[in-house]
Structures are given as C-alpha cells and as structure tokens.
Image 1 (tube, rainbow over the protein chains, first blue to last red):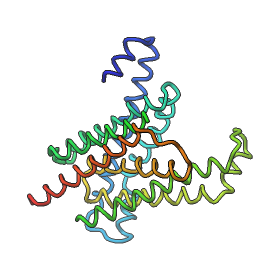
Image 2 (cartoon, rainbow over the protein chains, first blue to last red):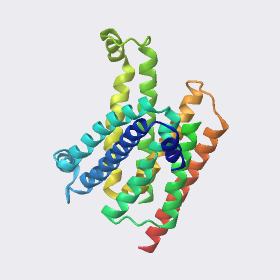
Image 3 (tube, one colour):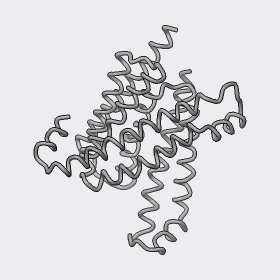
Image 4 (cartoon, one colour):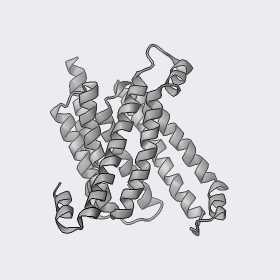
Length: 132
Length: 127
C-alpha cells in the first residue's frame, strides 16, 4: 500500500493509472481462475475414476478458470513491461491474499488465526524472495 | 487426510519445480535469442520443452485432485512453496547467488506453511 501511494505521489498520473489497472486486472484474473478451478474440482459429484475427469473436462467452470489464467497471463506480461520484476512481484503477490478472502466468502472457508498468520507469512516470504 | 495433503503437495511441488527447471533448460538450449522461426525450432527440437509440458499437465491434474478436498485460499498460498524449491534449483544447478533476503524469504515461506499445517490439524480435531 505504501508503495502504491509512493507511485501515485511521484509519477505521472497516466502511467500510474495504467499500472494500477493492469495490476487490478491481473490479480482479478488469478482470483477468478482459482475460484473457478475450485468450483470445477467439487462440481462432479459421486463420480469416480475416468467419469470424474470426463465430467471435470466438460465443466464450464474449468474453462472459465483456464481462460481467466490465459487472459491474466497477458495482463501480467503487460504489467511487467511497466515495472521492474521485484516491484511487480511485490504487488503481484496480492493474489495470495485475494484468493484467501474470496475463497472464504464463496466457499465458507474459515479464516482461523493460524490460517491468516500462515497465509500472511507466505505472502511476506514471496515478496522477500522476489526483492532478493 | 494428512497423508492426502502431504503426497498431494509433494507431487505438486515436484511437477512445478520440474516445469520451471525445464523452461530454463529450454531457454538455455535455444540460445541465442532471436525472434525467428529457427529459435522456435530450436526450442521444439529439444527434449526439455516436452518435459516442461508434461510437468505442467501433471501439476494441473494434481492441483485439481487437491482442490477436491483442500480449501482454495490456504492451498493456493501453500503452493507457493515452489518458490523455495525453484530457488534451491537456481542456486545448485544454475549457480545463481543466494542473498540474505532470499534466504530469509524462504524461511518465512516455510514457517507460513507450518502455520497452515497447524491450522488444518486444529480444524480436523474440532470436527
């Protein structure tokens, strides 16, 4: 957040807006992709072996997820052309937090203290390795 | 349940790491980089790109099996363990430098995963 405010303060507004828009689109695509994958994984009920995989491959959730990832990939590449990799990873790791929040809203996944601490630590760790 | 998660995430980690390593080997073997048809042919005529493709397919199926039971939020965070394994591969195979920040990051990621494991244990004991 401090970094985003820093960018807004010191760079031309147009550049800032496009970085922000690309970041938002990229994080949204990742989140939609993972939520769709979860829907796809739990949708085929009472099916075993190859029946399960057949039902999975014909589930529209799976293809929504794959499309979201394909589109998100393009946003991410565009985002990377505007920012250095370390700063991009810093912002991009927001998808870990957003998947957790949306997952808890959509699938009633409990946000226990241990889970929140664990996910936060992983996010910080990813940022540290990215800054490297 | 515990065994399901350990085996599942171990497979995911293996496929993800193989995939990234394969990409790097493909890129190295296809040098020099010139946006031409020859470059694409050099990539496609090397075994590494096929290992990478197989790894990605393997990672996809493993992820779908994991998501049948695992909560997507914590699982997505836990899958970032691949950053640590890819970092180790980059140090030992590609001789990239290990900085203090990156080592600290790896430790923080692993401690986050330990917290997630404790969270799952507590939740399964409640039920």
